[in-house]
Length: 401
Image (cartoon, rainbow, N blue to C red; front, side, top):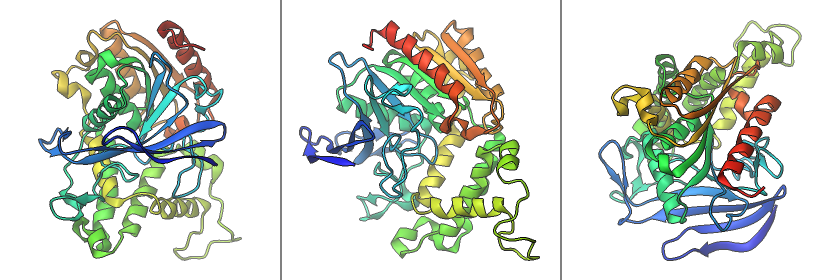
């Protein structure tokens, strides 16, 4: 990674502090934008959050017409490091197949922005940050947030950066929920939208899985009623179990069988005990233990709750089509055959709602056995589909090739 000497550069009074560097042929700008007491974020719960900050990254260059902006919305356990190394883990960004030079989201062509959501734990204000009224970490005193709050905060950052219309907003899973919220709340700012493997509302089954994870965290004695940072503890075991349970939902039975089956882990026979006899057990334990190194337990509670509360139709008289009435945005909806967390039927409901208002919408169901996580993996059919949609939208928008 080649760091350019612009670390900590102020961009106007109260503007973002940033670091710029090059990685894998991408010009990366890593920044944190503060919002002062005179710039509160109005939350759906009735609270004005102030002050707060948003951490984000940008890739590529903004063109003179500001017409080449692509906003990437991350999923539940994602972050702003879509195409650069995660600083805590050192691992590559979470969407390397999609974002970069020559990729469907071409950083030589587009100005790409990815923000850490409000309530997150990668620099954007969340429950681990200091509550100015107490001088201690917010913990459970942090206000409950929604998907709409996340999008409202993103819009405030774009305003601060002087960006009006977005050429494309894209994301999978919870990121797809944000895409739908963007299209409904700011139709005049969204030229094209790509919701992937998502739904217009969270299902009862998905709420149930989230509750299991939350209860695992809250049952950990180190959680301390959410005040673990003040007590100097960490509910790592509870958070690891929450991650293990959630990770199962991201995969498919076929993928689990193909990768692990009933294979034993570093042994020739079962131990008649409760160690990780099977490879799948060892894999899940690894997923849990590594997750706690990069994620905050309270953020997990807040962000899962935001997903649970998401019901886009509820804000439009219970009719999903009303959320998109009059839209001029172009849509491409993508689902996966083996995704049982956000099945194709959920994605088709979005398409039907868009059809009902004569919106410009394309839909593709990708055949794969990789489950919900397919949108993060090497899926050539998805790449070809999205490249074609993005190129077509770019021609219609007049974005230079």
